[in-house]
Image 1: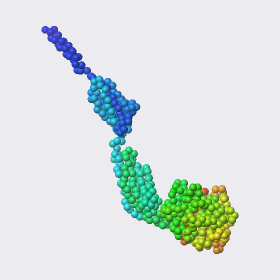
Image 2: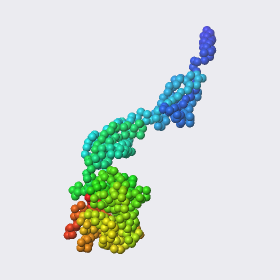
Image 3: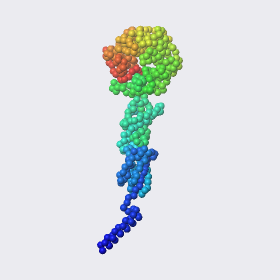
Image 4: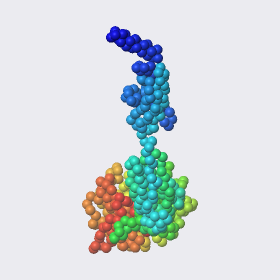
Length: 502
């Protein structure tokens, strides 16, 4: 009986195995292949060296240069295929592997900043829209924020209404920007662009502000900017110091030696044009620049020492060209030779008396020395000689309003050098009536020079430049009283030279 039972069990087991073998699925795993490509989401460019992980097996491969990848002999079932690479957001794709099949998937990856939000639209805070009568130094204030805490950089666009020039100030990090030397009387329109370096730029609306009218500056002078001389105007008071400073000429051009004429209402100055020096005029606020000289330029031994002069009525200008002195109308017409130096010395400076009857001239040799100061009438005839064949450097000519005094400078060290260095230059006032000379530099510090003097409008003071005699230190504009027993010296404009006071 036991044997019969064993045989029965064995028969059933063999029958079961045969049945399983005929079906081919019970108890055995099936396999297939999975291939794919990883590309950018925006333009479907292949992404090389991306890590591709197959879940739930966690098998990993890397894409080739064409972005392709392959898993071979994987169990036929459902999978999640993950692509990962630095600089991109992880991306997932489902895939179902079937027996002896080859399944292909494409995985699109976004850059890691794809979910980054742009900054908020900049809010223009100050100055208030439409505000008037601002000083010509204005502080712009705005705000913008970024939810991703990206570093924001700003571009400020500024346009004016006098020449419609558009100024673009890039790469600003702060939300505060101070604008200086804005044009008096001008209206400015401004806006701000915010950029997080990831998203498209965000542009604000616009606002406007207007600078107060021209303050009527009485001081004109020269400063150095970007390697060029630039003409400025400004005011000065003991209580407030320098105020209302305004840049009058373009810093891309070399301009110097401003001379204002109140009757003409114009400021004349020298400017380099095509390697020549010419006289130009402009309005006191820098508008309406006009060239005066043309065929015969301004010329002498050293253009930094050259000076020219207005006629008192503002109709004409005197200027030197080597050994000749010319007169020309302010509109550039009527050019005439007025005087030629009889001994061939170069005319460097000149001034015209208030009554128009006489002209004072400074002439020198080609090195700037052996200088003469003399007067001529309006026909060019020599009237008198004040200084003859001076050994040291001369300069700084100006008549007093009566014509009875002449302002000039002289290096009392009598030093001469190839580079025209001056060691101890003083300001002198020559009295025409008494033929006496007053030294206005008695309080000057040793080792410095007093240069480029001009009478104040009431002639109670002199404005001038003081600088170290080393020839490279900064120049500063001072004023001094003419009271002989109480001479005071006050600095008025730092880092400035060639003053005029009207």
